[in-house]
Length: 111
Picture 1 (tube, rainbow, N blue to C red):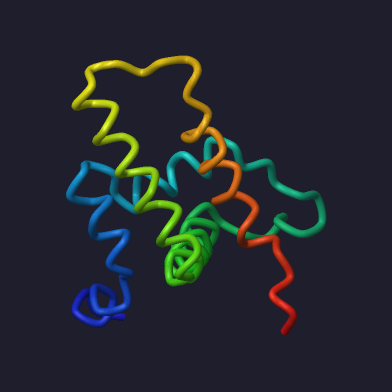
Picture 2 (spheres, rainbow, N blue to C red; picture 1 turned 90 degrees about the horizontal axis):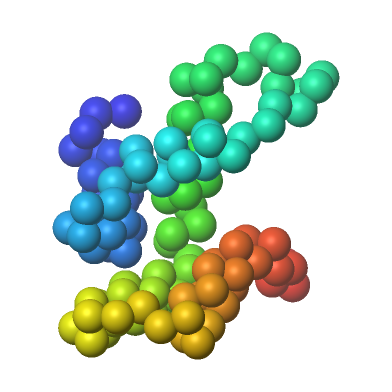
């Protein structure tokens, strides 16, 4: 797939993250840092195959309006906290948004 077609498929939320300095490559690297291969399932998969699959999953999940809105809320919260020049420990919103983003792909959407 050429870069033109690839860029057309990138959800706007990932482009917004890119502008804030978080690339899809960064997200993939973070995911790979947590990745534990499954014996018998991942034996014949190269790191390149896994990276490609992660990119597909990230693009697909970031196409979900719920994920987009949660990421937008997280970026808004980050901007607000920077303006306040503090990161108070009593703010739970960022943690809850992170949990919600992790849960959304797991939710059965009734289809």
